Amino acid sequence: MPEPLNLLIPLDFLPESESALEYAVAVGKSLNARLHLLHILEEESTLYRIVISDKQREMIRLGASEKLDELAEKHLVPAKLSFTRTVLKGKVYDRIIEAARKTAAHIIIMGRTDSSDMKKNIAGTNTMHIIKQAQVPVITETPGLLPHHPSSGPDQTDHNQSLECHYHGKDAECQDNRHFIPSG
Image: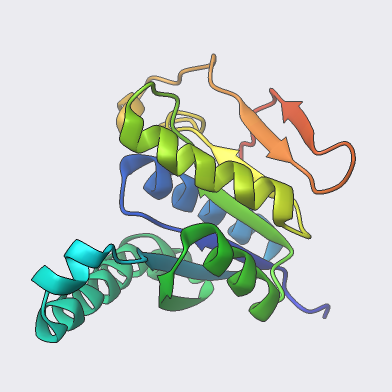
């Protein structure tokens, strides 16, 4: 039997990243893949370093680890998928690229927001850095892509959502408007 594919799923605990995890579970089940859940604690500003104690930093790290455990219990354990959970600290896009190398990821699957909100645009900047620097395909997923997605309700599917596939190289982007619907 061939080695399973490695899927890296960066999670920031926003609905978009949980949607990406749901998509990754569907892909992982159909490909018998191993999922690598990753959360990055962003680099600290000078003010943050002064105000937050080491004990508080450790509590934040433990909270992120517990949240990854909750997501794994909710999505991966029922799907009977092999997975890892990692919390790293640093610049988001650098640590995701590094984790992709260390896990020998075949694909990075991450959430995407479409917003003019400044906070979300900064996250979009991280996504663009990852797309440009990754040595593997990067799939960005928007909530509502999969049928019966929790944000769509039990019998509603937003057929206007699209999956964007971003590949590293000179032709760095492609757009795939088809919906992935797992068989079975």
